[in-house]
Length: 340
Image (tube, rainbow, N blue to C red; front, side, top):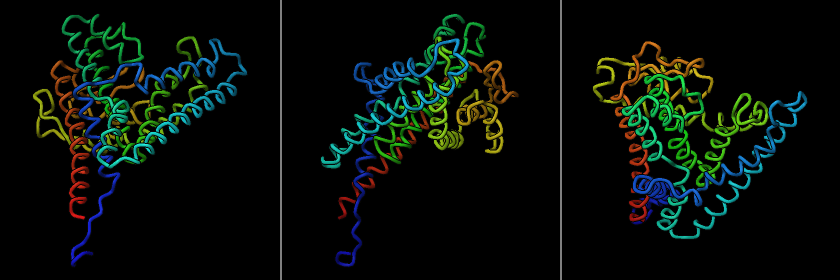
């Protein structure tokens, strides 16, 4: 108390963390991704490619390779995770010696590679532009986003694959890294990005690229499931709360409930990916399917070009909402600092 008035002491993390997210969001919007040679996630991928060749047995795998592959995959994952977290901890500790504003600015530069909205938005929009030229061009473009065989997909399935990728990566590339940054700072965001990249490269239930990942990638897949559990549901909640206002979306009187969303989300093999995908499918009123794997909102119509535009605006509103939240935290911290 001072002269009967409370003294408000701002949290340095509130100022530095809020500013870092705002800076990362601005860098992403203006410049997008850094060059590959300077991109930490690219470095993670190179390590995982090298370590994966050691951990996963070549196809056909010998019968006794399962236990060895599991141990190698687990050890290789932990070795990479230890380096990633150690570097992030050291970097954040060094930045903590600076004033909170400089700390937030530089922390935002470091956070940006863990956060990727502009690239995701542009890649999904490019699929729609390619489909406008031809089906084969659309298939070639969507192959950049998915691991499934695209050669037999029709126009609706190509568009649906792009929309599914948009929804799932809204979590993986935006909400989850920002949530883990809020929880554990730069080490949290970096660890999540490493785990998610490892799952994308190793998390397969069988052969891929001439190697058997059934056991070698199991730890990577399970860890990503754990770290993505809460963010995936938060992403679905954010989508649920920012319903689209598009001509292609269901009429204003059409509603869908959380219970309905949960039932649809359980139709996918992933315990997490189905949540944002189901939210997008129900909100747009479209069916999303991966042939032979899942169908979401099977009563929905086939996705149309207007649905892609609507989905991009919808996801942009979620990203903007997160940026506004970070800005509010920053202003609250700065305001409290001024009242000390």
